[in-house]
Length: 313
Image (cartoon, rainbow, N blue to C red; front, side, top):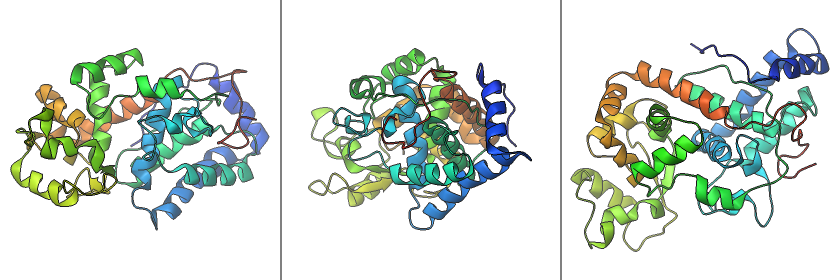
């Protein structure tokens, strides 16, 4: 069931104007949401990874300049080229497709930042996870921030303290950290982000001793020592395309994939709770996603509504 939350400040008037611009009879609320979902469903036919990729775009967008769609901008100094995103962030073509279809319904009204927020919700819902009412009214930023992406996004190699500090700077708490990390219950990750755990943990020449031995064998088969660093492994080998609470169950078995996943065991009470109670995880995840979607949005006359998500107007 979708949770009910109040709108972003000053957004109610924007939405009212939007409904007037897009027609009557709830055209925005029915047609628009349906369009976003339909485009993603169409993409899933040939790309089972796309749902996880789209929620990652929203996450990586909000943690830099706030939720302003800046990750979508092209350019030499764009966030796309920052280390956390280069050759790994994906789904931009699907965002383009959503923007094209949405503009056929409500041209020049729906921002690229809102498209990312709605695509994230639809991706989770379509994968068996919770749904929630996405707050609308964000406007698009005009600049990208490569340096901000380098410094503000939590690293897959980060300590728990570093992750918590970066979340706190974005206005998010410990519970948000654990809940949002649960998005790693679906999707894939390139070998280069975790091979140090398989072969040379902390420069010891040995694997990470905390890694479950049978799981280590599976990962080494996927990511051989001299293999391609761009090979991908499932975050969850059992239900790789479903949004569920298996992520937390696997953490308890020492089967977290990234170093930044396994460090969450430093908070065993929350991990245990989510592993045992999927409903509790879904509820916390919904709240955390709404909190994240509220990070420094541009509203009112700030920013713009981009015609092309890859370029400022």
